[in-house]
Length: 99
Image (cartoon, rainbow, N blue to C red; front, side):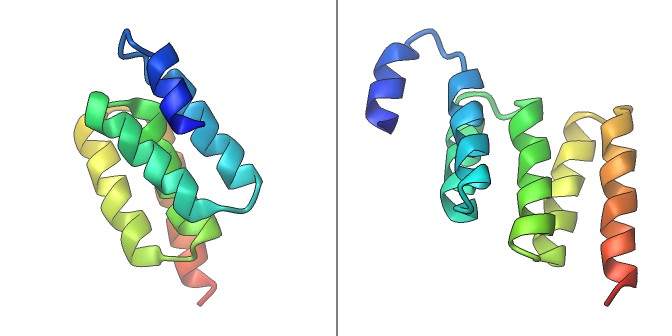
């Protein structure tokens, strides 16, 4: 399936790959979702939705606070003034306070 998407996606549009990653997240396959977000980031290292989704999957699906913080740092570096980073940071702090 991914190879078919790559053939359809010859113009470098990573939206399809990110959307497929979101589908795998919904199917409770966070590892495959992360692999697809990484695939999109190989094409576009600043792909906003892929960076954001990596934070979300690490925090909520993989329950990996360290990875979530790392990915949030990457997101903030790419998008320092984006309000979504502040929202995710608050969610990470809430998740950390619950432990």
